[in-house]
Each structure stands twice: as C-alpha cells, then as structure tokens.
Image 1 (cartoon, rainbow, N blue to C red):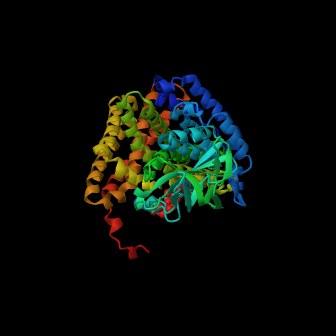
Image 2: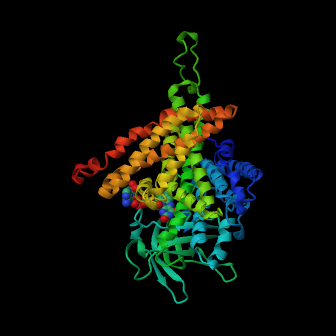
Image 3: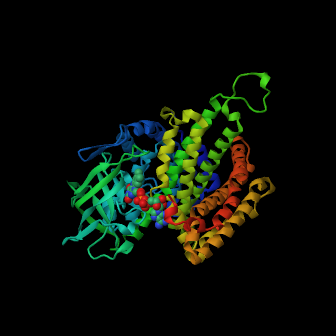
Length: 589
Ligand SMILES: Cc1cc2nc3c(=O)[nH]c(=O)nc-3n(C[C@H](O)[C@H](O)[C@H](O)COP(=O)(O)OP(=O)(O)OC[C@H]3O[C@@H](n4cnc5c(N)ncnc54)[C@H](O)[C@@H]3O)c2cc1C
C-alpha cells in the first residue's frame, strides 16, 4: 500500500527560501501572513489532510462514486472528511474576508492544494471546482450574486461546477448548443446536455452552483454568442434558505480510468432556472478567469500525485533487495543489496525528484505572481505579474501534468512488477494523473495557447521579460553554481532562438509553429525549471545540512541529465510541420 506525507519541509523551503512569501506581508491585505502563520498553516493542514483525507485515497479509488435514482453518493468517508476540511477553513484560506474567507495569499493556498492533491487527487476536485466558481463570480458576478453565493463557496457548505463540455463541444467551445431562454422576470431557463461535469451531483454539500455556458436566442454563432449563467441545484428563496429543486438532472456518471472518487456527471438541464453572470455573449471571456485559476490548480494536481509517487519510490528503493552494485566484487558476498545501489534506479529517483521539486518552485512562484497581480499597490508591478501569470499558466498546467505522468510511470518502474500490482498503490498514481493532461484544455491546447497567444501578447514582451529575469539570475551566479548556470545559459540561448523562429513562422505558415508547439512547451518548461533549480542551488550552496546537500545533488542531476534535452529539441522544433502535414490522410492508416 502506498502512503503520503505532506512534504512540509520542501514546501517551507520553496515558500520561504525561494519565493520569499514573507515579502507579501508588505501588502496591506496580506499583513497577517507572517512566518508563524505560514508555518502554522503548513503544519495544521498537513496533519488534517494526511490523517483524514490521505487515508481515503485507495478506498475511494476502489469504491468510486455511485449513482442511484439521480443521486450521487461519494465514497465512504469523503463526506465527513470534506465537512471537517471545510469547517477548518481550508477552502476559504485565500478567499476574501468579506466573503468569510481568511484573506491569506493564494501562494499559501497553493501549498495546501499541493498537499491535498498528493493525499487524494480525486477528493481535491471537490473544493477545486468551487474555487473556480468563486473566482468567476468574484470577477464577473453582480454585487447581489456575490453576496448570495460567495460566502457559501468559501465556507464550503455549497460547491461549484463548471458546465462547459457537450458531446459536440470539447476543445471547441464555439460549438456549445445549450440554450438559455429569457423570462419576463429577468431569469433564464436552460435547456441542454452537458457531459463530463466534475462534481455535477453529489451528497457532500447542501447546494451545488452550476456555472453554465449557453446561448440565448439570436446570439451570434461561435464563441461570440456564448454567455455564462448560474443555475443552483436548489433554488434559493428570498431569505437565503433553500427552495425547490431546480430542473437539473444527473443522467449518468462516467466509468473512467482514474480519479474514481470524483464523480464525472452527464447533466441534463431541462428548463433549469438560471441567471446571467456578467455580460451577455461574454461567457467565454468570463469563463477564462475560472479556467486560468483551474489550470493552475490542475498543474498542482499533477505535482501532488508526482510527489506521492516519488515518496513511495524512494522508500521502496531503500527497502527492496535485488542484485549487487556493479562495483562490488562478486565473491565478497552473495547477499542482495537494496535497489537504490543501481545507477538506473538512482537515475529514476533523481529524475522524479528533479521534476517534482522543480515544478513545485515554478507553481508556487507563479502563485505568488497571482497575489502580486491582484493586490500589489503599484500598478506596474500588478501588470508585470499579470503578464507573468499569463505566460506561465499553460506551462504550469501542461509541463507539470506531463511530468506527472512521466514521474508516476517511473514510480511503477522503480517497483518493477510490484508496481503493476494494484495493492501497492503505484498504478493508481498513474491512472489518476493522466486526466490532468486532458481536462481544463488538453495539453495540446495549452501548447497552442503558449505559442499562439502568450508569445505574441504585448509584441512579445512576455517571453522577453522572463528571459531577462533568467539572464539576471545567471549574471549573479557564482562559480559554486556554475554546474547549472553554464548549461542553463546554453539552454536559454536555444530557447530564444526557437522562440524567434516560432513567432516569425507563425505568420508565414501556422502549421509549422502548431506542429512544434508541444515540443516548444517542453523546452520552455525545462528552461523554466533550470531557472528555479539555479535559484535553489544558490540558496543551498550557502547552507549546511543534508537537506541542502540533497538539493544541490538534485540540481546537479537536473543540469546534467535533463536540461541538455532542450538542445535536442531545437532541430525538432525548427523542422516545423512539413513531415506532419504533407502526408495525405489516406497515408495515415
Ligand atoms: C474526468 C473528466 C472530468 C472533466 N471535468 C469537466 C468539467 O468539470 N467541466 C467541463 O466542462 N468539462 C470537463 N471535462 C471535459 C474536458 O475538459 C474535455 O474532455 C477536454 O476539454 C477535451 O475535450 P474533448 O474530450 O471533447 O476532446 P477534443 O476536443 O475532441 O480533442 C481531441 C484531441 O484533439 C486535439 N485538438 C482539438 N482541437 C484542437 C486544436 N484546435 N488544435 C490542436 N489540437 C486540438 C486535442 O488536444 C485532443 O488531443 C472533463 C473530462 C473528463 C474526462
């Protein structure tokens, strides 16, 4: 059986020594986020999550969510654990004080989501979707809607959903066909069929708020004619109490590869009463607020499960005895050694650590930029942090979740055949982690977002600013960290070269850049992790102790074995799309 312990030492390192979360206390809103509070949150959240939610990971997977007569029951123990989690204030940690949240930084809430995802990825989706709904209402809801719904979402007695996908509308939301018919009282009636809706129906909260994309009569075709509506499971009376059940029915739940504890629902809206959120026909733009926050959250899910796989693989490699080190004389003893003596096993463990801990630094730093972009008093800081979040969101989502699948696969490999056996818990990690590459925009769509929008926004300022930051970090690197600074400067030069080519080729032949988008995002992610590992190496070189020596060893592995992969990606990216697009469809059989 696999286990999980929230990696609070590493979280503390990233929060305090890499991103300096304490600097946020200079912003009035975050004055309370002192070092003591940060330490207290990490400790208390870890205790509760490890002891009450992590223990349900494997039973939740085996039992799954069940549908009976339109009602979904979550796995045994989820309801009680969710109630305790919500009542402890973890859902409201970063929510606004005026809506019953604690007003702490999103960067700190990011650490809690990281641990929740590692403890139990399926469980993490329930508060996760509520978070997206909260953000969408915060950005686009009317004052009345905010007052009506947001406190419930931050306290967790109500949950949220995101109802976008339909049978004919997946990546292409312009195909949404669900209708919203206006009524005389200003409300709308929603008719349509949504599929794959996470937490669309369940018994954990008193009410569920569905944020739904739909079209009003005569709305323009495509994404310009889509609006966002809110349709609660139970209608809400004037006095705030819950009224009759709305016409939203859970027709079925999906059987799926992983995250079995999370229900994935087919929802039929049969004339469900709803209200417009934000402006008419601006639904896609509004939903983007929710999707960006959800994309960062999905990156954290990939990170959490990767951490879980890494912890178990390291423990196993120190216990499992097979074979002898190549350097040991055969005649000295015929006893086996633990498998951690083997170079290939060490390669996998260090690979897992380098990706997981590197992605943690990238995720938490991006989260800090979310805080700065929203709350820093200086407009210029807000703007530059917003640009950074825009640039890094597809990278955090896609690079981390691809890494999650790679790391969980390596976790199985470290266990050998025992990794393939269900009771050891490693195959669940891999099954759970694949979905993170698919929802909230597939990783292919994230790569298109990076090359299509983010590279060219503000005339290419976003990547230029990031590259300048990496160069500044390189410029102040001492000889002690030359082992990573040198390969990083080579990788950065490679990345700049392919970035320029992509921007130019996009105008000349969009198929060239599109065919290279996923490889480009991979290169971008590796350079980003190189930047964070350089920062980690600088901090660690100045400190003593096993923890910091371990960091230096992992940084060295990353610099030597992973970062040079960027150079190999250069010709792959520059090759463009001819070999992909030239074969006629009949040749791809
Ligand atoms: C478990 C689970 C939970 C989910 N939860 C939710 C939820 O809560 N709410 C919700 O609304 N949806 C949810 N989804 C739906 C999910 O977001 C979609 O499955 C996803 O957006 C992809 O859409 P699709 O499955 O229709 O794939 P398609 O859009 O058909 O894509 C198929 C392939 O084509 C590629 N592709 C498509 N268009 C392009 C393009 N323009 N350029 C390049 N490549 C392209 C994709 O990358 C992919 O590889 C969930 C799905 C699952 C499986």
